[in-house]
Length: 457
Image (cartoon, rainbow, N blue to C red):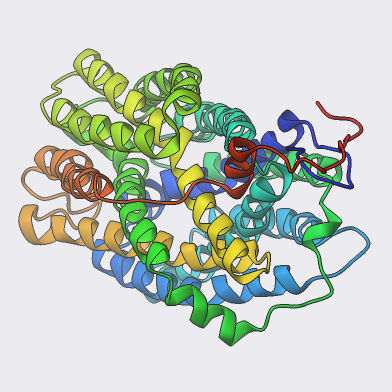
């Protein structure tokens, strides 16, 4: 089977590098928002939780609309590229504003600033990721090629994570600022935003959309949404994937404060723990991608889920930086497996929908899956608010009597529960193979002429 009949194939690395650009802004936001707003600026965790719930509701509404508009877009530049070109600078600008809260703000003013720019950042991130993710099944119809492209893009994401997570605490608290000031966050956000725009634009201009996917038929909104929500696979894959997403969102949000309170170390030392997790995850992508080629995405995904769940037990009992790094390496192995497989499971659902309904509406479908991603924000916020109830942690100004145990529970116990549920549920899930793979297995029709795609790489 060819990658895209009638159009020159896009080299996997050109598509994959886009993940580097889309990952830097949102991971700085999610990885530093609690430290910036709660621990430094003094935003109450209960206000944080309320904003996260509102933000999730708003995002659940705008996600399908953004995906629907993308699927209906018809331009000479394609369906997805215009949205990527517009969304990148908008996200960068909102991220800079998010980390530039005026020093005079407090109380309701601080809450409103946090809420407005958190919601805008998530909306523009959703715009980017719905369109970027929709290109994967279009550019690479077979699972083997998808696994290569996905492995490469997850590798680029991990490089971005080294920068936006592991390096950020050092830049914000030591290079450009201090542990008790915010100026370092603004400077870092400007640098990251500029890099993200340049990379996303390069990827968007390099990707060659397949005109066969952009038909004259424009899928209607409500009937499309109705058929999606009636699809049992949508709910099964979405809810199981949410267990993984929620766990990693909690880890992303709380790691810096886990280092500060649970390990009793300066926040800048989070660099070493984050770097260890990311380096192990990056190294593991090669092995997991090969396992996908041998076992298929579904079986490999189930194994990765189980490994990730077990890793949080070790992290709970870490008592210093060395033991935390060792436990973090286990997290990296399981996380690497999920990175290599989770999107492949989601894309199988998109393939099945297109085959059944005869319409390529990847943007709307991925945006609908974004509904489950919004659960990450709600649960992360509620989990943080629970620390006030169980441990008395309200903010950096009122950390309670045992913030160390509070963030040990937050970072390890909560993710353990979610990933265990997901790993068990994944054992019972069945998803169809991609149509292109089935066609390859069956072989071409006897009278089918050979098809050659120029520029195959």
